[in-house]
Length: 315
Image (cartoon, rainbow, N blue to C red):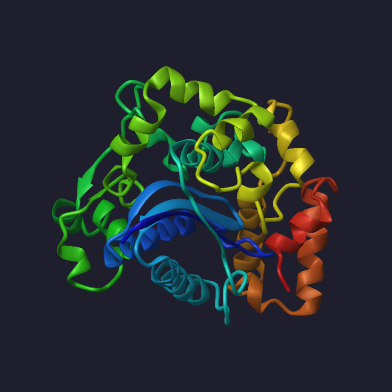
């Protein structure tokens, strides 16, 4: 029997350093859903953690399949060894309509809480723009696996690069966007999520609603013995932003001009490849690492926090 879960796995270091990494991460997630016959209600891929609300009969296999597949890709790309992220992962069974609505809302609003976008809709590595897509005027370019594969020098090459080499998986007639990422519409149960929110206007209300005690009181009306969840429960185990800071970000008071993890990783990786004979950040010697740290300091005028530098320049 399938149950609904929120799960999250995180890391002290950045797990998704480039756009290509975000694309591959979602593709690994999508293929894991297929393998375990699971359904996705919501997801959000942040720089050092991944959130999802899923309906599955085997959560452990779903998470393991995604993480193992992505770790192999990441370790191969960056000449890295070992487990990527914390050994365990956070999971919580979601029960009750209001409990589910709150959990999905918190996951979709994750970029807002971490101050990486001014609204949840401005973040592209989340399933938010698959909900009420027609009503909210969202659209995307679609490519089929067969047609894209014919274009070996362009789109097809990018798509094939971000897929598993398993032939059975590549014969499923899947659709992709322009980046080679599997379309979220194929893997997000948008119709089911839309029923939970009832209408586009109600969906917009929840995406802009401030976190308060009313969320908890609403969940108590499910009357199923499950403890209500709040933002701190959804963010349990992650370290990207302190709880108090997330509440400030929720009110639109984040510093959107700050250096993002992706921008910092891009600067560091480009510097490494250019000056250290194609070395990955994980191959740097101590003296080379110190040079990179000084370069970061001068490039960003000392405005990069120490904890962010540690995430993006792991030892």
